[in-house]
Length: 204
Image (tube, rainbow, N blue to C red):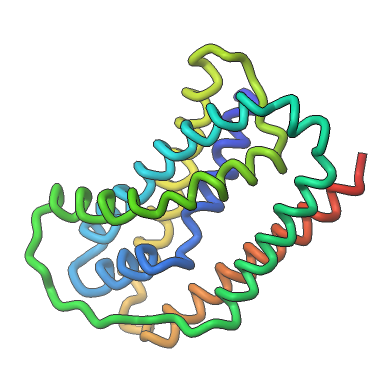
């Protein structure tokens, strides 16, 4: 497999950490309505990650010369931002809203989270930061965006398959407190990634 695919895979796994409100919603959906409903809902979010992932690559590719010139500074800046985001998620309050069985079709579940996730345009900046840290660079053709898209899809689909499978099969033990802990520890992972980004800024 190409290194670009694996960088897309890492991006997909990172973006699919359930630390945001949509991620919490998909986990609740799994517990209340079922594994399939929760997974399909999550795939709406993953689809947006793919769209924004390609857009972020096109953006990063246009300013590649600036990224190369100021790479250490950008990595430090990105690391600090991720540490701040991770800290806020880890230490902040997680809003868990009880949802009832919504009786939606799978298509409605998918489109619902897709539309909501589309409004989170700041994801493009986060992805661009990840690309700069992971040194995602390639040709100006269509090959690199396709590899990134397939990597993000593989990472997001795999992580959410595992997440929904575990939640559904152990739902009797999963309480609101457990969902809060999952969200908070996902924030901790982001914080650690920020620290790693800063460390690599000083590593040649």
